[in-house]
Amino acid sequence: MASSNSSSRSGSSSLVVPQARQALEQLKYEVAQELGIQISPDGYYGNMLTRDAGSIGGQITRRLVQMAEQQLSGGSSSFMRR
Image 1: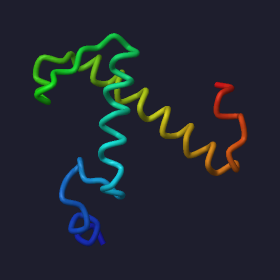
Image 2: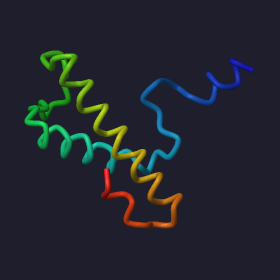
Image 3: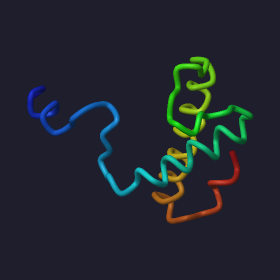
Image 4: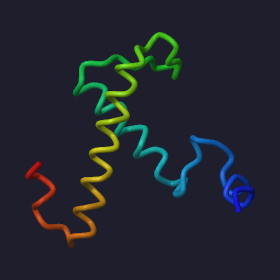
C-alpha cells in the first residue's frame, strides 16, 4: 500500500487541491507579516531561522484547522472564540 500512496504524491509540497496554492501563499505572507518575520521575495529561505519558519507553519496550521472547524460546524461564530 505504501507504493500507491507515494505514487499519488510527487513530494511533500504537493497539494491535494492544487487550486489552493495561491491562497496558501498569500496566507503564508500574511502570517509572516503579522509575526514580524521577513520573507525574501525571491523565495529563498536559507537565511530564515528555523524557529521563524516553524512559527509561520504553526500559525498557518492553526488557521487552517480553525477554517475547517468553522466549515464543519456550519459557519458558526465559534471560529473567532479562540
